[in-house]
Amino acid sequence: MATKKAGGTAKNLRDSNPKYLGVKLNHGQSARIGMIIVRQRGTVYLAGKNVALGKDHTIFALKDGKVEFKDKRKTNFDGRIVSRKMVSVL
Image (cartoon, rainbow, N blue to C red):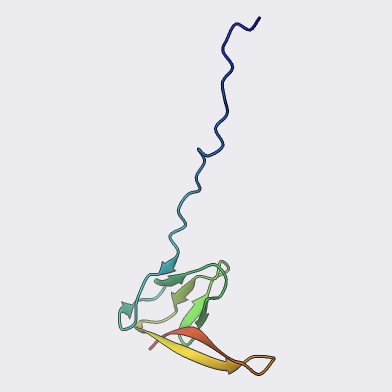
């Protein structure tokens, strides 16, 4: 006979830590060197002028200035026009 009552297992008690992704500086805000503008998974936003792409796809400022977001349009391999967002510091 068992000396302790059998304990059940709970499968939904785990949760992942928040990753704090998204846009950190919006259009028109001032950025200083090294400030993070966008944290992302994959290149949702493309890097434009005076910004760089980190190894985890983080976009950060290389120079002081104002943040600018604009759409970059290109033709896809099958002829469709695709619009991507581009981030720059001017």
